[in-house]
Length: 415
Ligand code: EPZ
Image (cartoon, rainbow, N blue to C red; front, side, top):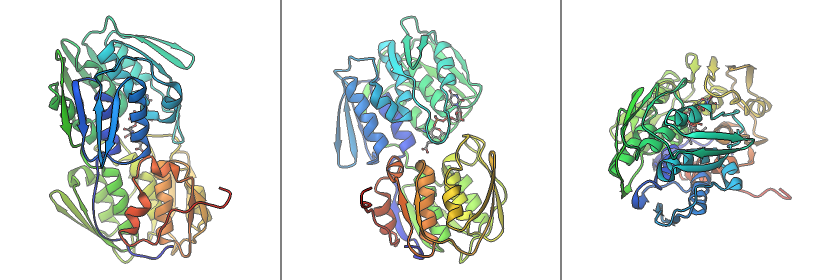
């Protein structure tokens, strides 16, 4: 039900987009890896399933994931599981780095775009990997792999991470030019270095990997999830609420905080905590363009679009990173929003209120955006297909109800 303020405090867990590449890199060391603060989300469990198929043992124990890679023997990725999650492509680099062979299915695109992997393959070929793309399967021969220079035509997060992992055990110095600079890349560098790797430059556009002979196991706590944090900030902002987010890195949230402050929020950086006070009514922010980090994160675009629906004024949103990330605008319009979409641009004219109704998630962040809309819509909103949301938010409804929302998970009759 809409109309409740989102108020209270919550501690953020590890970031999905940090944990997924870290899980992939967990096959590299001689020794076990324990990931603390591991979020209980579908994509993490799917990735653990892929590790098991490669011969690893994984154990989920109250918020931590233990990976025992001693018996890893298989360099062939399971087709079914790999298609289940896009991030299975992150396994390519570490499997090659560890076994110098890899057979992986071409990962499907997903709801938000085609999501090609040409930059991943270009980067690995620059390291001497021979790759045959045989209609849906990639046969990779890395027996003559070598360190080298990689230039990424676009600062792709996944391609940057794959090359980092492939090169960590490769003798010599590998450089990545025009590397992605997301905080999750820096976290992967910290993780690999904690296992004895030698990487520097993550967070800048030039990353240097000095291959080491071997790496050892480690216990590691990844950075917290800035996108979950940003989503909760939007929930408090749009309901005139007040939240204290604990275990966050306010520095990583600057692009989101800046836009929410423009909309009238008061935000206080408390070091490892962040406090947000929402205004009685949001104002439209200046035009929002998604960009690679440190620009505005594409994973927060849908949430900002949803809250802009009830902000005073007109908001222009340009989605520069993915080609299909406005899917939820149809349902928002049915709820009473005034949105005009033209290609990569959406123009949102704020309205006084939205009407609750039955809507559906079409992708992970768009699904979260629909829940935000339900928090402020008049009456009841039912969001279907919440499996999309479960991929990236651990028990989202429990998170929000602990902060005052009237929300519950239901099973639809005959659904
Ligand atoms: C990561 O995806 C994240 N996923 C995404 O989060 C995030 O939106 C994205 O980075 C951008 O920040 C994980 O980390 C698991 P990219 P990734 O390679 O690595 C194009 C979420 O909601 N591209 O930086 O796939 C691509 O099509 C998810 O948590 C190529 O053209 O993103 C896209 O337009 C969604 N060729 C752009 O680059 C390539 O080889 C950015 O993609 C690779 C990418």
